[in-house]
Length: 67
Image (cartoon, rainbow, N blue to C red; front, side, top):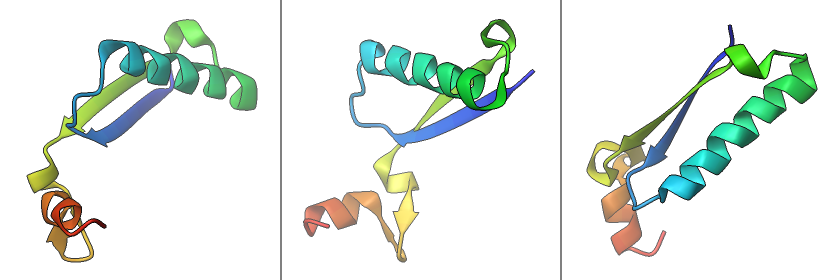
């Protein structure tokens, strides 16, 4: 049973976009590895931008700087 964990920043991603991610990841595993879509699990975790860091600073701070 394949398990995919997608982590994204919590920035108002719609339910429709999440559905697209789930369908896309499921299809990718089916097409590339021949995995059964019926047993493929996809979890989307949303992380606050204050809890996600790149290059020693939070995404919140990077966004303020236009990075």
